[in-house]
Image 1 (spheres, rainbow, N blue to C red):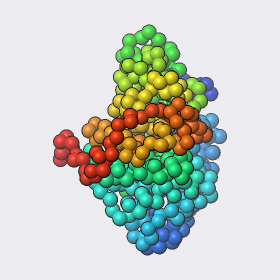
Image 2: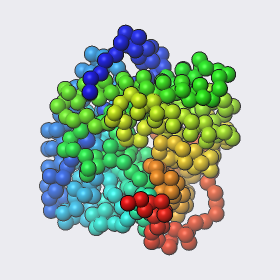
Image 3: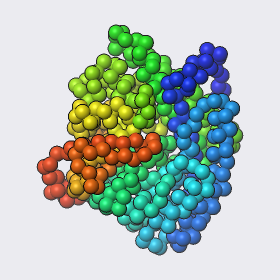
Image 4: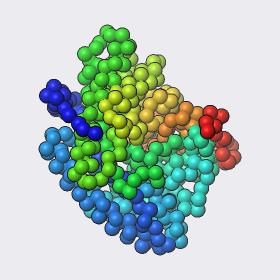
Length: 451
């Protein structure tokens, strides 16, 4: 596919970068590790380290070269790998932490920001390797700096694995007791996708090529700027403005993706256009919702405004590229969005409202700090609710929950960098212990039978 930009588009892009926080949030190289299998976890780890350093050695230099040549900021350079529970299935060892440490060591050698794929796909049940990986998560995530993990516990086709839901509540609890920051690197999915370039949930799916380049573009500030020019207009005009803006943002992502693909001699996968906010003022999804007409994000009307935003973003992205994928839409991570942090601190954004918003956003309950003494079964129940939304609505949903050990409701937790900070929000106090302890599997919905 050829890509041409006229002089008007170039000038608009320069303005968006200079004044409106437009950036390529990530160039993520997906790498298959299927040929790294070995009965010894130590030998498997060494094979993984060697392959990553060989395949991705030029990733950071190439991205830096594109930044300098085109003047487009590329905030993160990342790698995603085949879910480790698949790669390590032939290992005889019970603990997969050595593999996580090899991933972390490779990330340091390569100079990338994060590496994702310490993951398991357990939507219908656990293999022995899935269980070993999940039980390794607390140690693996707290003893590494750059490794991210995920577990897919449900899907529209398979239903929800409630044994996995129960276990993941305990895993999050155990990880938080070691180091709450470990929980910021762990996502629990329903309907996880194979080509997501965003962390912490990125992994290289088994249906992907040997190696691939996926690009994630983000521009909440650009959309907010565009909406300031259509105050008082009808909602149709708002939707059209967002769609046209998303088109321009995706075009830039397409340019970077194709250029990185060409220079690295790696196939181009997808552009993921996701409005992923940062703590910076002017780079907020909450601000967009307020510009649509809400006094405060979280008030009545928020879910409808977010649905409009998410749909318009997807439509604009699809117009701009034939290969839009990943999650593509609007993220609502509480800690990473200045407007949402403010709304949560003021009590306008509650857990119940966030859950309602996940019905129409790109992912789900993201980077939410909960009281440090939250029991494992409550964490599992929140995961189950979120997975049910994804399963019934045939969409990706996820939970990234952080029990803030030593913190109470209203306290602020600082995560640093792009992860920002968040107030600890209250949860319902009624127990779901009996529900979660049942285990088993919630059956797939009737509309999953589409063959």
